Image 1 (cartoon, helix red, strand yellow):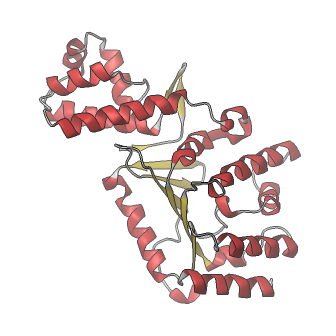
Image 2 (cartoon, helix red, strand yellow):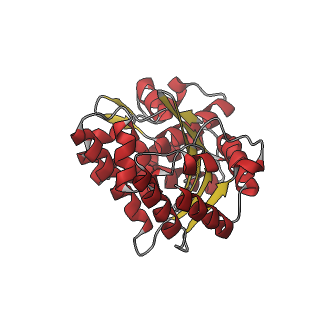
Length: 293
């Protein structure tokens, strides 16, 4: 099931997990050849509520999920339990008020940051820039000057939010980060030469952490399928929370949820990772580029 960026409807919020849960219930209903009106009667609700549930607009109650599963003929306890776990996780996410809610400059990244905060592993492919979780404040500021963030306050808000996100790599139980960068991201100068050298130094430093794996795809590797866009694949420890991919394009974002929708992203990531230098050789290349920066 694919979704766009975070969207609000009144005082309700459509979330990635909510849309996934709604999509699963939609598939069960259509497989059982039931209408939304019939589903609404089964849970003593309106058709509008069922529509909102299947679209991920509202949190779902456990009794409603159990009744609908029974109505759709779903008797597999593992399937029902997975849906209940997913609903519980979605309700917890909706109630959580992370630091990003206090930062209006975060904008459409709010939903991504909420997911990133609870991810246990992130695989990211970046063909043009250093990944956000590995950027220095000076590098971020230099990016801000050339992006849509033009006012100093906006740029500093972007710096603050990104640095806060990076804290996940410094906690007692950090998430795992596997970052693959095209060589162009290291040679593309952002800011002054001093800013770029400091950024490359920081990359080398972060690559020494046991939970951070940095690989560089060199120009000499030749043709690959990752040049079109950057993306990240987020993994979670909670039951029922399948991998989620987040890709950015000009003026839009794309979410891919679940194994089937993620397949293309996983394939590209595995390809660029295979073509890339080993982590130790990648650090050597980064260091060589730094010395010539």
